[in-house]
Image (tube, rainbow, N blue to C red; front, top):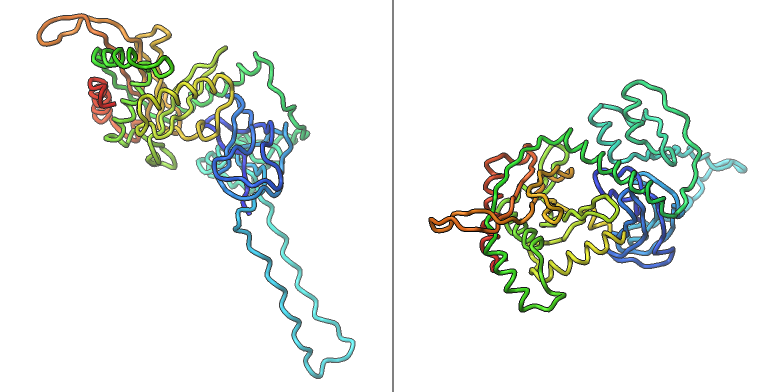
Length: 397
């Protein structure tokens, strides 16, 4: 038997609200199937299941808000161990007095209560040396939250637990949703600046060859197959990461953990405010037309509020481009636990030296924000140069 739990859909997520079950008891599910919809500060996310089996029981009603890590359903994945058959009663020994009853069985030891703890609270407890068994949880179903751990460490008494009430499964008011998203973004960025020793390197890159190639490609392509510069930027970063893997992964438990693939998170501005950075999986392996189609689909679904859980949690690095907003440069903040973010500014025309002559040239400002615990400025400068070299040879993208 396997548990399907409330997933973590970002470093800033503490809890989520179950909006709707897509599968029900008796339904068979395979890895990657959508099993539920969950509402977070970033919107409603379609949650995938990562265990194949049969849904046995739903543990949480739609409309309920629960912490990350809370079991939501039980799945029969074929690993359940059958109960052992009771041993046959031994033959009665001769000489036992008639009427003597069987020896009483020893009382079974009561099962130990399971403590529900959010991932952020567990990490904070380890940092502060707090025994989770001594913490009184105030979250749903007495789950231990980050505030509970910090309160215990400070020696303060826990407040009385709130009355358990299901949250209505409907979208919050627009202003409220915006405020919640801004709070979530602020929490993640505050953590990033507090915990990650950022360093920055940047360069101005001549992309006239890339734009010329792009113009020729689009002139011969149908309208739906035409490319935009942002896709070239993303693909150039993905290919450069093959030679610079220390920028592709996560810093967790005091060490760098490489990503399982090159899954670039593309920062997408949402209509009405807010930001998400869902992942384009295996970006380095996709052709430019395929990447363009996937990027267009990702933007549309992000703004419609129909992203999938893997897209929200799989990104191994983030790219952001503010060129369409008119800015020439962007110095980003790393999204934890990632270790790098690449930024692109607006494409501008500048005087440039080509073959000893000063000519007008299309250039773009390229920046890197990186985690000094995983890499240093020397490696960062080489990585940025590698991105520029790939943009100078667009036919190889």
